[in-house]
Image (cartoon, rainbow, N blue to C red; front, side, top):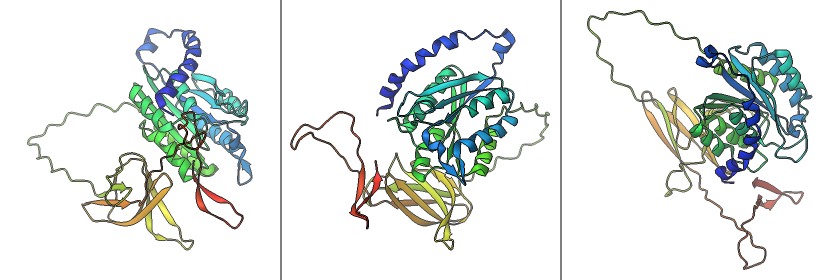
Length: 372
């Protein structure tokens, strides 16, 4: 779906909340001179949050870890709460602002979090947009922290949304925690953070969620102003050293040997070169940029890239003081699909949904889904 059509469809939602903004009490002049920073926690309330990790539902784990997060929250930053998919099933408009950004009362905030009972779909893009609009992101600094356990399920593009919010906002940032998600889901969620200058965290259990929330709190926290440096008298300034180039990997992906490098869509995985006893490699880092430059220590690495359902990897050696170019051929292509109501008829232009399967069937007569 074109993002700007999607954005226009949501403008009515934004208008509904203008009355709330208009009813806020005016702050004293001193407060207006130094406005407090504000953030919004967008909590996934979709039905999948009842899924379990080690016998405990994900929503219960999230509630417990948010409680710990509140104990170290920077009291100079107001915090609000928004959730989605918690009231009705199958409703992409099921998004609710539960708490406006305000000074954090841990008990009040936790009570609101504990009341979220997962039920429905995952309109995470619309929720992030509404959170940004509530904080007047086109006029003031605004930060969103999204905690989600899955993909957007309401025909929106989180990556396009993030780019538009970054372009339109004064200082908008989205930090994203992907909780118990797949690599495919990580690719979609990570761009929401990367395209707004935020941080993306993967959390597969309660311990990793604790760490991700702590790191997010540190990132959002207001920095103390640095003290003015003492004057230094320099008799003769030393000449500036020549800048050294980065050491690492410049990565490029192509669909075929003679194709032009991809400029949009690749997702990169950096791994250790050796496999463990289970035939797996330890992951070092991920990158959602099309042609990233990764600054690394000298040594051997395994570099993988995915584009849609295509994947390829290769060994890369980084030499001391050198930027190594790594070009990976995916041996893939694009599939253009159209549907007709009858053979030879006009291609349908309504909203369509396609699912692509492998040609071969398994022993049970089923085909594995490749993408949708």
